[in-house]
Image (cartoon, rainbow, N blue to C red; front, top):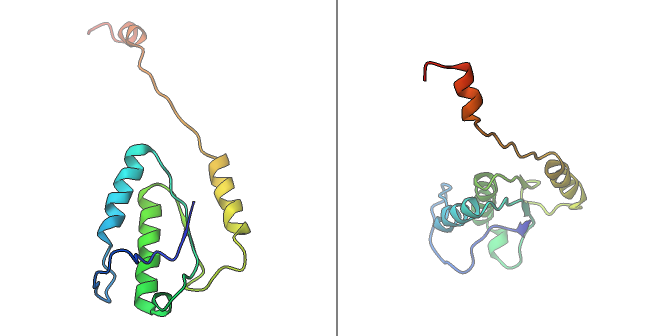
Length: 119
């Protein structure tokens, strides 16, 4: 679970107003995929002047949503406002986790050859 405004304060790059993905999102998503980590993102406005900048906040939120999606998770937000409560979001995550299943398929060559003797 990641509670963030999505704004990268450590890397001060000038992104255009048209949403361009932060390069760290793709690398973080790759690490999450390789390690089997599902990321659920929860947006809440940050502090300071950056969270009041519409473009920074929107790009940050889009980056958070992209990271969550690429890792197999979900992102939760109500526009650029702070949620009244995280409880409905946490309940949805719990519902998602309760309904995940792992399928393991194996191949039985002896049975397969019995049904197809031409091999």
